[in-house]
Image (cartoon, rainbow, N blue to C red):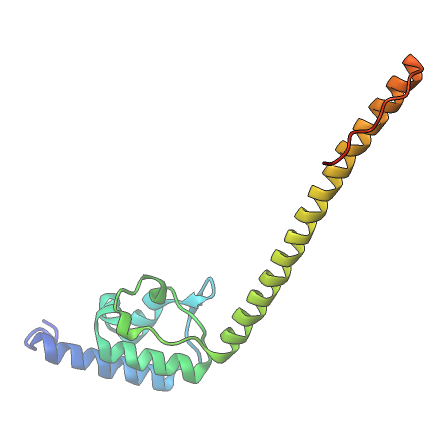
Length: 152
């Protein structure tokens, strides 16, 4: 029988939060898996169930504070989170990256528009030249002058 068996859900959650805080205070780095926080490894090291990391707000706050303190940028749990109030705003460096990417996108859109316009004009010129060569070929074959059509 475990020491936690007689505790209420709230008391058990508080105990898990204390265990997580103790683990986070003594750990020099958080375990990562594919560039994201390895929640299962953290829960095992802290001696708590993995689901408590996802469901206990006190554990989440402690983990967020540890992420900030240790410089961890992302973790897998953040992608599946449904609680909109717990979403952290983007970091300033990501704002700079977003602005830079938006600027690159605008530049590429402008270049694309210019190329589309140039392509349209070149196709128009090609059509006009083909018609002119056709008239010249007909003049050579028939020996008669063919008047070029007017734009009006």
